[in-house]
Each structure stands twice: as C-alpha cells, then as structure tokens.
Length: 288
Picture 1 (cartoon, one colour):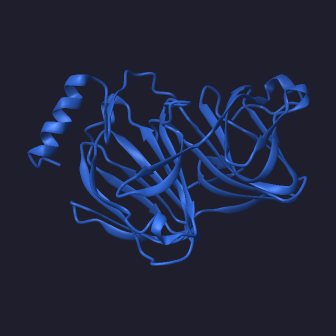
Picture 2 (cartoon, one colour; picture 1 turned 90 degrees about the vertical axis):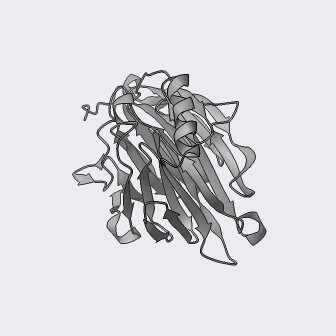
C-alpha cells in the first residue's frame, strides 16, 4: 500500500461524473445502468455496473431466466431481497441480503437468477469484470459469501465498511482474483463523517453514491457527489470522502486494468471477433 501523506496531490480526485440510465434486462427487470451505457461504455477492467432497487414486485418478478456467459466475471451484491441462482453445471443457491456472489464464467456456462420473493424490496448491484486472455477459457467457478463472512469494520468515527474485496488496515476481504486485484467496499458514513483510504496505484477506480450526499477529494480538488452518481477517480492513490448533513452510502471499487483488446457482444466478452464467433457456435452446439 502507498504511504499516506498530507500532500493533497496524492489524493484521488473526481475526473468525471456519470448518472445512470434507466434500462431493463433479463425478462424485463427494471434497473439503472451506470457502466455499460453510452455515457460510460466501460472502465477497464469493468464492463458493466447495474443498480437494481425497487419496492414494486412487477419490476423484478420476471427475473433473469437462463442465459449464457463466457469470458468475464459477474459480481452480484445483494442489499435487500433474495435471489435464487442455478446453472447448467448443477450449481444452485440463494443470495440473501448482504451476500455476495463473484462468478467466474470462464469458458462458459448457462445460468439463471430468479427472485425468491413475491413482494417487498429488491435492491443491489451487478458488476461485470473482464478476464485477461489467458483466463477466458478457464473452468467456471463461484466465490459466494453469506453476510456473516464479509468483514464489517469501523475504521473511523461514524464510518462503517463492509469489506468484500481488498484490504482495510489489516483486514482482508474474502474475494480473491489475482488477475485484476479488485477492491470492493460498501462504505456507510454518518452525517459529516470523514474517512481516508489508500488505493493500489495504477488501478481504475470508481465510487458510486447510492444514498445521501458526499464530497470526494481534498483541498481545492474536493468535489460533491450526489446520490445515483458515479465518480470516475484519478490522480493520487489516497481516497478521501466526507458525508453531507444527512450521511451517505457508497460503493468504492477498483481493479487493475487489463489493457487488452475487447470483442464484446451480449453475454460474451472475448479478445477477437473470431473468438466471439466461436463462443456463439459453442453455445448453439451445447458445448457450454
């Protein structure tokens, strides 16, 4: 981890902000697409970020019936509600509030994600993370963690952090992915609370505020972030955030860029058009 100093030039700053766009996926599930929209098609190694959050069962009941994936990872973080997943390799489970599933699709699988509830609130995030060329045809696998297995920390007064991936102090998140060395934190701040956190140098970093208001950065480079805004961060490797009068809650996500060509269509993400065509052929011929 980098050495923390009081020099504000070492602080991460907001390079640009993006507001999510209404979208639907699966069998008509309504969601907000933040990465993967025309405003921000990707942020290497991140390919997509969807926020779903509704009290209306008709917005989510149709779910995500069987669909294929190859060449990347999907990360589902449930805040509220229950989602059952199944795949064609015999894996099945239920994601409950506070749980995380980091699925490596690798060479391919067919899976479904269907609500395990008929009413109530369904809220959470799905993030897509690219895989390097060397890992795209690896065997599919899951890293799935119930809420009690995700460290919950209080690193400063008025600050609570759920540590999904990366490190906070001496604590280590349960997710391991050497290819992109991810950081994934759920940060909740009381009114006016402030926190600094060192980030790995050279990573792509974004913060997405989903409750309240906050200011990111230090000194003259500090900028406000409103709810449902994503901030792409640049500059130094020290992240600083301070909540507004009503507090705030955000996810902070970072990953090592792959800097490889991307050939992408729907649920397949490869490096060349030929590999993409092969993925379609393999799926159609039942080789997933």
